[in-house]
Length: 468
Image (cartoon, rainbow, N blue to C red; front, side, top):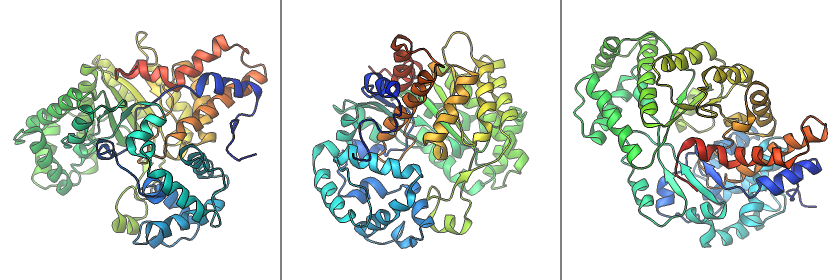
C-alpha cells in the first residue's frame, strides 16, 4: 500500500466515514496566507520543483540546516536542481516531523507521485514533476481551481498599491482574491529610520501630506478604506504580545513627533504608542464589520548573524515565552468597553497558553454573532497533527468547537493546499476516536454539520467575503 492512501491518518471506521462523506468535498476558504498576488495576477507557471516547492519555504530550510546541508544549497547560489537534491537527501531524516507527511501528501496530490522521496528517487521525481508543471492545471490559477479554493486572503502592507489585486478582480478567475490589512510597520517608533521611511511610503500611497499625528491617522484610515473598496474584510497583526497600556492621544502624538525627528522611542513609549494604535485599528475594523487577526508569540530573528546575512523570514524564528493573557484581556476589554470590539481570530504560538487563550475568548462573545471571538487554528510550529489536536481539545473543553472557523495555509507556497486535507483528516480522526470510545453519539445528523462547518461553512458565514 502506498504511504499516502485514501485512509491516511484515519484510524477508525467512523473517522473514515466522516472524512470521505462530509469533509473531503468541502471547498477551501484560505482566509490567511502569504501567497504573492502577483503570481495569481500573472498566472505564474513554475518551471520546476524548486520554484513551486522550495523557493521561500523556511520550514524546509530549517530541516536542511539541521541535517548538515550547507547554506549554499539552502538559500545560496546553488542551481535549483542541486537544492532540490539536497532537500531530497534530507527528507528521510524528517521522519516524525510533519514535513515528512506534507512532502508526500503534496507529491501525491499535485503530481500523482507515490514513491517516497529520497536521493535515489529524486532525479525521476524532478523530471516527472517538471513535465506536469508545464500544464495549465499547475499554473497559479489552475492550482486554485484544482483544490476548489473559493477565496484567498493575502497579507498586505497598507502602503501596497494593490495593483495586482485590481488586476485579479478584473479577470475571470473563479477564485476571489482579497487583500488583508497588516499595519505592523506603523508601530516602529523605536526604529525611526525604518518608521520614517515607511511613513513616507504611506503618505504617497494615501496621497496625504503627513505633517502631524492626526494626518498619520487619517492616512491609515484612507488606506483601510481603500482595502475595503477592493473587498478586504480582514486585518492582521503579528505581535509578540498584545499592547494594552494607557496612552492618551496627546501622548501618542508626542511619541510620533519624536520618532519623526529621528529620536527612538523608549520601550515604554513604544508600548504606549502601539497600544493607542491597536485601539485605533480595532475601531476601524469594528466600524466596517471586519475580522481582526492577532498572531501572538513568535520570537523572531534569533540568530542575529544569519538574520543580518539573509534577512527576516528565513528560518530563524521560534516560539516565544512572553506573558500573554493580561494584555490580551485588557486589549479586548478596552475595545468592548467602547462597543468597538470587532470579530476576531486569535492565534497562539505557545501551547502552554492554549487553555488561557481558549478561556479568554469566551469572556467576549456577544450573544449575537456566533463564534465572534475565535481561538484560531494551530499556527506556524503548531500547524501539525499533534498541536492541531491540542488546540481543538482546548477549544472543545472551554468553548464551542462547532463554531470554529478551521484551517488556513499561512503559507507562501502554492504547494500548501493539502494542509487543509491534513487538518480535515486530523479533525475527523479526533471525532471518530471519540465516537468509537462512546464519548460522542454515532450520529451523522449531529456530526456532519459540525465537520462541514469547521471545514468551510463557519468561515464563510463569519468572514463575510461574499463567497458561495
